[in-house]
Image 1 (tube, helix red, strand yellow):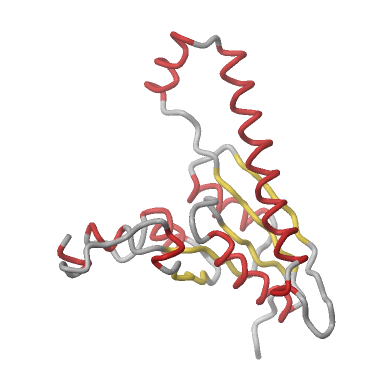
Image 2 (image 1 turned 60 degrees about the horizontal axis):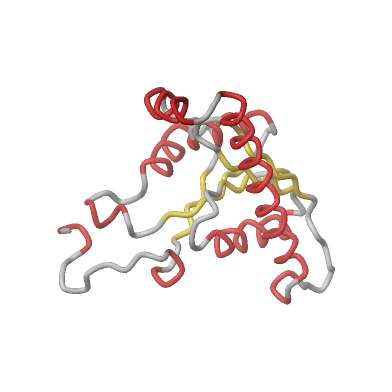
Length: 178
């Protein structure tokens, strides 16, 4: 029996190539007539960074900045999805536009992704990976690695092309050797 995919979770950090990964998630959502859940994990300041910031900015102002950041990130994500829906890439014979929801969570990204996938009963996680970590000898970033190995559902890793990632590797060295 083929798997039923009703909810696809797109994990993004809004980096270079985010719309490239979104194209894959949207294509799958259209194919399966699934809902698209977009999630961004906004990592809280580490205690030391919070202490340093607190010496210059009062706690209320710091919290206001954090809330403004969440609003701005959510607006960017909604704009990215809406723009793709309106583009030629999104036009299809049946004009099906999967419903979507955007969430910006206060959590370390991998924990936000895994918790949100569980909360919305996602059937598939889609996220991007880039060559940056290959430069350091890893096959994928630490967030992607953690999600891939801790998720209880399938994870689709979309390779972000070098020209979209904003990162250029040294062509004289093999990626693993940098």
